[in-house]
Length: 324
Image 1 (tube, rainbow, N blue to C red):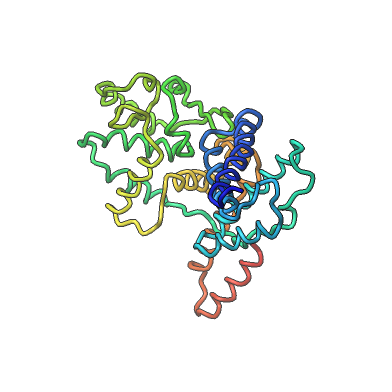
Image 2: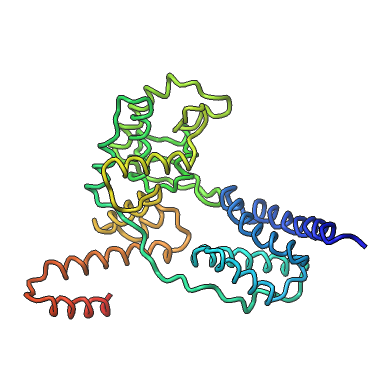
């Protein structure tokens, strides 16, 4: 008879073998990006740690085990949206096991997700974006590169991973487009503004003097380490600039993408065109920006409508919440 530790180690090995199978499936069959697969596996690792502790094989899981796991996520303070994402990944994992005939019954079938609510993404105004970019000191070593990064994020509505992986061979400045490789290695052409092109070309003067490591020569945005810039570095650049100008909004690289889509919609752009530029598979994903636009419209009406009392403003708020 083995000790409890030995049994747990054996159970851990068995479970990891099963997770290894879905890793191959996600990369080869579903063509998901490395970032998406890594996030997916990180979530599954949380389940794996719980099952190993409880000495449960991943193929022997019951609904009550998953409910205990879900309750544990709540107890350690995981945000409801993150809980929902983790449980969604676990559901997909067990659907895969059924599809591959590892299991006959789905233990996640009756598993409930936490209520996440509907929260609109943060959006910056055009003035805030101009102020943020304008605060960058061009005389510093990274200044021109950082201006080019932010102009490209806002001009093209890119995901931060798309920006970090952008290649010189994917720039078509004469035509006014760049080629972007999005989720699942799907490519799309995105228009780029003359202002962003100008900032990138100015950055090339500095880039040409950089020592770039072998294998990274084709990446547009290079770090001080001679490799393509990382997502974390872009996040830090934006965070520092926001603090510098005293911006109260909590922003990230994705805020530029949200702002890009919202400003296009406000300017009268077609929702399908925005969908294509963002690389959304479903129009439903893009429709979140119609909620943002309507909320802005509602707040403008409430604020500027010629009513004379707070009670009338409250009535208008109720009416427009029902309309929109």
